[in-house]
Length: 224
Image 1 (cartoon, rainbow, N blue to C red):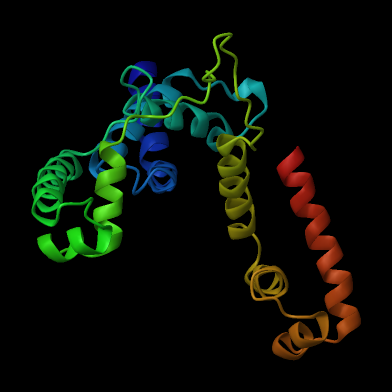
Image 2: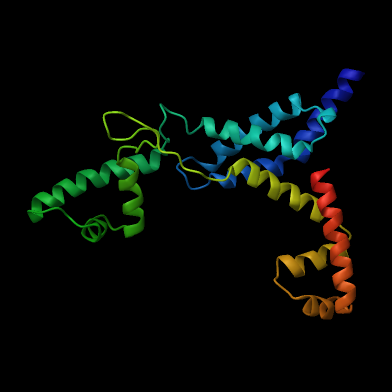
């Protein structure tokens, strides 16, 4: 009976959080891997997160699951340190390379992107994308000097940012309708307190006071 309850709770957790997988998959959309493949890998990560999650850690499941889901998706991109390219783009890339060589021979010079695009009947943007996919990868961890080296690129963690956005969306979604509308008007629609008051039938002072209370509650919910 206990095992059945545990399995049922696991299935419910996975079912309720499939939106996390879609959100993470959109993070990598358009980078050379089909969306269905990203979603499948993300579902594997979600299952792993559901199996390993411990409520005693004091964190939301979404906060714990997002890095695990993203980690599984990143596995699709790992191929000897390079990024995988979809078969469609690879085939187009090979076709363009052959066409460019033939066109350059015909013209007696290197063919331009516009000339190549016209020859194959494709938009210039698509031609550039495919040709870039055929170019050798550039390493960000080694320099061209004899001594080697490393190029450090300080960037914000996409896992942290995505996790924060998902958590924020969840807590805003749990607000009462009027409070949620107030926050949407103020911080997503860019309305002033006066404009928000007019929409909600409140005074500017009432909006100001309510907004402070809502923000305090959201901050408390997000930080625990």
